[in-house]
Figure 1: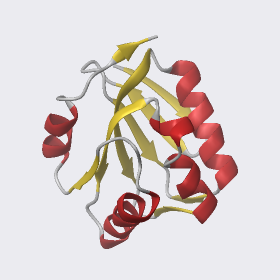
Figure 2 (figure 1 turned 30 degrees about the horizontal axis):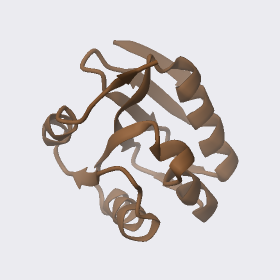
Figure 3 (figure 1 turned 30 degrees about the vertical axis):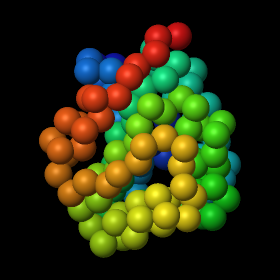
Figure 4 (figure 1 turned 90 degrees about the horizontal axis):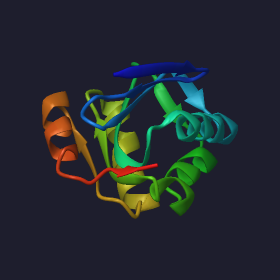
Length: 128
């Protein structure tokens, strides 16, 4: 596993070919999301991979950030997206993302990490 840190997130390029982004406890702006996306793309060993998203106790983002993260620019690199939603705030964010943004890749939220990882393992990975 390779782990890199950027302001706002820690990104794990897992041995099982899943990208895990753990967002810091912060309110993400559009600029934060673009920066994290670009950083992830620069370091990712895969062109397309499943994406596992987690956050601290307070992780949220503005409307433009949500829209960007669900855009085709981002989603074309995600074969699937799993949110770990252990708090009501995370569940609300994941639910909003799925129902309002309607990402083009399969997207679900989970309350257990192992369930999320097992679900993501069924999706393809495309090397760079």
